[in-house]
Image 1 (tube, rainbow, N blue to C red):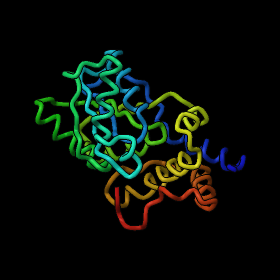
Image 2 (cartoon, rainbow, N blue to C red):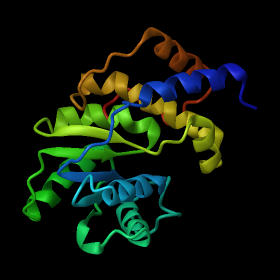
Image 3 (cartoon, helix red, strand yellow):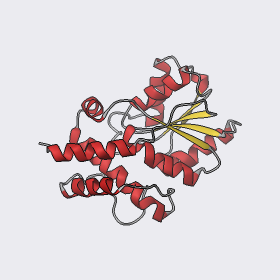
Length: 220
């Protein structure tokens, strides 16, 4: 049973993780691989709005996605986008990345190989990964403008869509930890984290929402 305080703390972190960017036309849309096919849905919708002429889906598999996406996250995203009417010649698939740093570096390689110069990126992620992904992109790909995007769902609706509330809160807590520590590891630009957000993160960690926390050594 998740307490009222835990839900309130999760909501605080959820709101903080959003960058609140307004979608606008960019050189390319990049869908970051994960367990959530909603990333592909949002990316396809942005394409149909005419906000990006080409899509890159990036991601291999992880322990979280291996069973449900055996052909790899990027491949399953591509298939979903095509089901939603995106033509295959508008999609590039990057199937090797196993973490966000690799998502970024390998996406750059795929675009260079296709002869595409990107000056701006619509960066599509899970809702609670917007800020972390943005901070990593600013560090690892500083030459492009970044517009963050994700599903417009609220926390309750998103949690219901995933069907595993403790896992979602674990993920929200893990994303906040990365925002705090990645700048020290050279993986992200610093973000201003309000004190009440830090306190909420600490309370959730103390209550056991820790499965997505990293050890003290650097990892992505």
